[in-house]
Image 1 (cartoon, rainbow, N blue to C red):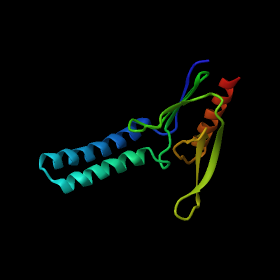
Image 2 (tube, rainbow, N blue to C red):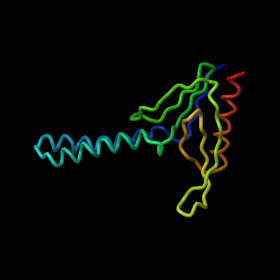
Image 3 (cartoon, one colour):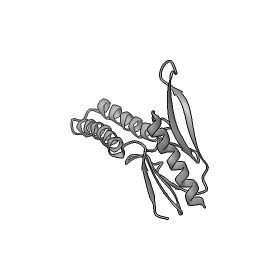
Image 4 (cartoon, rainbow, N blue to C red):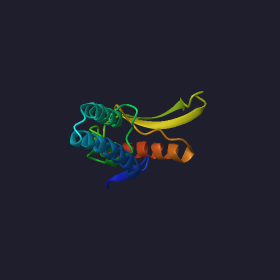
Length: 141
């Protein structure tokens, strides 16, 4: 069976946001080093840690999935340390949860092992998450 690729959210958008945030922080970091401003250097270093933490935190889910008989490759983005290849036997589940300030909207995400995808809304996106699960089940057999 060939590898099946699924895009939950556009990875190029996610990578662009990551690189823009990193570039902005690095610009201020280099500026503070060049101008010898220790306060700005400290602030830039703290912001760099915040950016790296955010893109590796539980708030940020994976965007793409590649399923083949050897395993399930999940991709969080260019700045993430959480990109993994999981065993094909990893359990999966599509979850629907409330969202928004008043918790009136419904979002969907898929959990594979202990990894959560980006949250999506709409029937088409829910069908995509279910197709990912079906592909995992087909590769197991």
